[in-house]
Figure 1 (cartoon, rainbow over the protein chains, first blue to last red):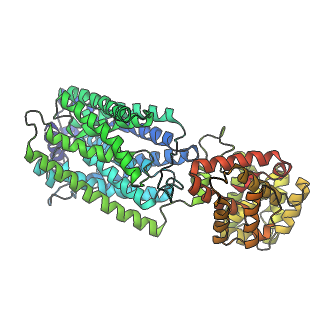
Figure 2: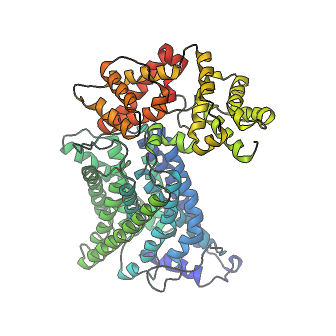
Figure 3: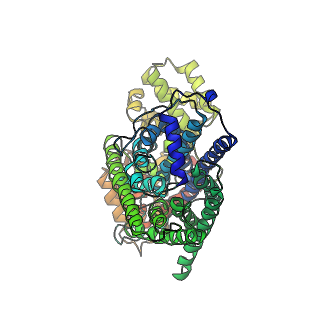
Length: 431
Length: 209
């Protein structure tokens, strides 16, 4: 509950005292510590974008490496500007209805708290947006993707965020627990990604049309995937511990919960493969650890270590089973974003209600959690599906099959990621 | 002629063929020597630029890219320079109709990579896809025969249209039947093998991809 207290304090500071000037505020040593901590956490979350970029690029084919990297890079830039201009106000502005905020667009307040909080939250928005890029990789037009991501950052993410993290949001008033965003950030991003995957369709030849068999399409550099996983894990300490919005002693327990849940998630993933007698895939283990991280994000501040590990462990298992489910449904998620962020995020949000220290298995809380999870899906999925279909009709969402053949690096960006050893690939790079 | 649109057409075409600073050198050349040339002399202009840049082998590729620029190419190349370009390419390579023969070898190499016992209908599926995209019936027949019989023949370009389009249609069929990874592999290997032949040396099979 520390988070809510601090959120309300910041909210009050931001919207009810716009005339307050920095020089008029007397900062205590703790205030300084808080601001520094939030900024450091924000930088850590920013660095997660590098992790996403590496992971998604590594899981894509070499001929699309630049395209995937570009989408991740652009996500950060767009999220920062659009969230400052629109998203932040819809999310944290004056919320009279409980369904959206509406004040303080294009924040120019001069409180260091405002800036630190805006910076931190903008990085969260970028995280939500970038989940879609990996899922829809290798066959989505760059311009269309950028437009859809802009909509996600400007509308889908902040509206749901206002329900949970705005003190007057209807889910916040119900007592919905999502400390750092298992649902607000990760599941919302994943439901948008799911809509995008459905709208854009699978990659050319991914599924056999006659038998329905899935054909593996190996990523071009699994080393990048491993490094990306480590960077994401590293950044997650800022994501979760920074969500206290204050340098308080609780950050220690949050950090250890985060770390152990990630480890347990990877182990859960490994165990699932071992029990099924299948080879343990490195990509799935990385995704398992990420699933553990996503799962613990909602409840990292309210659980004990044991339950944090259970949450992460089950998150890892759900991730593997969820990936299999999507393949059976012939849904082509290149990086496994939906199982990692969507399914494990939903599980983690539920677990946050089940495993509250001192209030285990409180049925009322579990019902509230289920309402919040369902509301997230019912908001993000249909709205983003509509947007993707509109974009598809107006400017086209899917790349031409010729571009898929040649690779989006050349056709969309006139660059190639690895010129030294791509000379004989099935796309032209020159004469 | 040296308006913005024409400049853009040349820049787009040149940047797809030349690399790095060569593009700017080529554009500088065009701007200083050919910017005022009439549309009807576009082919000569391109040839002259390629000659001056010492990049004669890029000539045909450049023309193909100009064609890909759809409306812009029509604007630029009002008078069809194809015969002139082809004779130039033939002179350069020493092989008459090198692109058509290179494409024939390319199709045969693709056929050699296919398991026609496991996928006996694949050549027919390719033929149907080519026909569905509007390819001349006799050319489509010929491609099917070449895949089955493992024997290269000359495919007349007027009947076939753009070789890159035909190669792409084949790629899509292979990707749907065999998967994109296998399809990439087959086409990549075919390019390597064709480029070792005399036709491939005269006109690289990479131009078909």
